[in-house]
Length: 153
Image 1: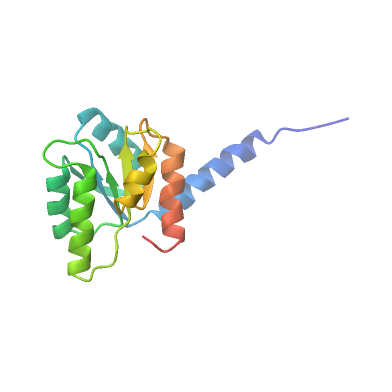
Image 2: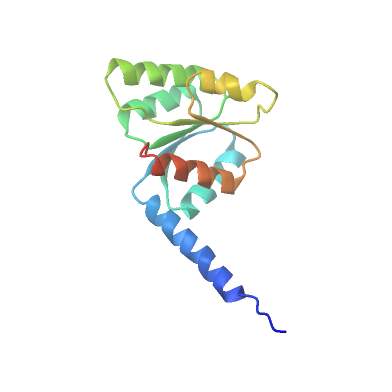
């Protein structure tokens, strides 16, 4: 009885997935709204690795300013920030989109708030998806891919 383990094939599949994700995210731009420098650094590495361009806003006020001046394919929004939190910033962005007849930009909550009912709170505030910290890179990748495949990006 014989068997073989496709070790090389597994590596090839991973490389193909990385290449297809890079192609999928080519020319896509993200607004990362995050006040914590360590989290910003971590996210920079992830976003660069999957081939996304990005800007970083350090609070909700800055996020609104960036949003009004630029076109983004998705917004990753922290909640607990100085000056203005993510939920309030999301409401301002949604209002701005409505008042200016703009196509909706998906907003993904990226927060340490992981208590029962938090997901619903963020979704009810107008966010399109919810992720908790510490961030699961694979889950982020899948969520971004799902928005792209639905034509939302």
